[in-house]
Length: 347
Image 1 (spheres, one colour):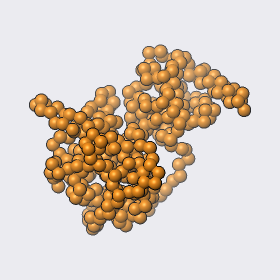
Image 2: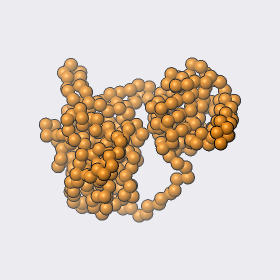
Image 3: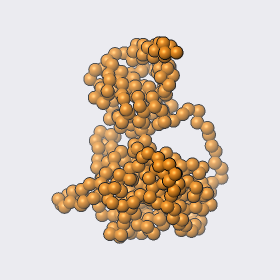
Image 4: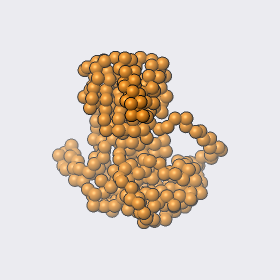
């Protein structure tokens, strides 16, 4: 399937839902799509797939979706690659979007490359920035109003800006937490378009024998307003206890750099950075974190950053609002006692 570029318009997002509950990435994608659509003078359309999901459409409208295309079918009750790919490709063929955005979740990373392959277009994965601008070809020719997709490259040591000027739709996956959702509009009602391409099982279908659900024992660090984050400078797994003490005193959570996760000092779901999670807390306290670009990519948009490191030349100080040069094993307990004393004085 090849799309005629002149027929394409609209910024479409895949509104991921699991168990008939919308994922936060759907609202983040709508927020960025609104910015892109404004520059292109077009509309934002959310693609909502599932079974019994039509009632979720108004929530997508509340965060800015101009239209919601709903594909509601028993074949989509649980995510499976083939029926979801077929549904998205059918929407693209029918409505011809100019841009398609998908969250870089486990589902999105499985779905997006298959869709892009079938519609014969490119895909830029794990984008950290999206904007509309002019793209200059190697020949010097300027292509106006292209989607410029920014992502870390070469292990995070450089930033690449990628365009797809010769094919439509322009497709990108975006990591959760990178984009910001718009303010919610109370009472919004969705302009719903019901669409169903029909589903016939083929040799690409898989059979789901069982779905095993587990309950997370910890809250998501992406939701935390305060994070106390540990790096290699913390020294050991046992020393993370002092970070937990500070986090408890502040009413926050503990997170970690990749080095600590790789060393077994912290769980994978607490990792901040390019290969972990992107966070935007009100307060981020970086303890013994040097500030490699891979880590900065996951936390540099925090409202206030406090860095504690004994190396005064550490890159983390370049992005920190406040810096403390010293041994985290001495400074963190002191901060904890100060916070507890302040709270006791106000009690």
